[in-house]
Image (tube, rainbow, N blue to C red; front, side, top):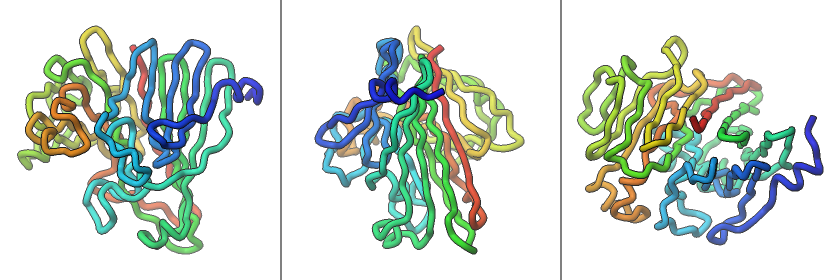
Length: 291
């Protein structure tokens, strides 16, 4: 049963680069830091190591998208539609609930719902919630979208755009996608994924991962450390992205060599929108486990 006193010790508000944030901390020392802007996970430290990449070149102005951590891309993936790139949720402040703890587990919910700022961009009634759940060695992010329209369906694409920290992209491999349909967005070529993926230059590929497709965990090998990555089958795809040296150098919010310290492995909905009937709900999650 949740313990309110323990919850008070497990969570605290703080500022990071001037942004209001909430931090969850477990007795083992694992911690996660979430900005209210975008319900954006900025940091996850487990077993004494930072597991997420966060660019040092962000503007931190409370309006610009934050590069790194885990952006919530909603209700549009990238520029596949008429909305701003990756939607508007990552640029807006979410409300935060109370932290809940039970033993060594803790979670906290962030909510974004219909308001004048969203209606100016997207004429849709909705409630989106991101639950950030922390256990020793594990971070689970669960996005829930409720269609609060009385009659109309809600359609959206999006992603949990997770930037994972690596020591050296040249020595990093990702396993578990072998045999999955693959679209190489750089070369615009469709194929089948190799069992082990390696990264030399710009890498931007989409893999089928939804219902009816084998959803075994992925394993990111980074030197002596391995991270297991899982996602719910309600996400149709996984996206794997690294900008490579040339593209990274052209990104104003990334250091020139930032590409060497990160790899995005995203739970995503890219090609076909999710449809939620009036009054309905959709849930999708991604889980990261140190192994």
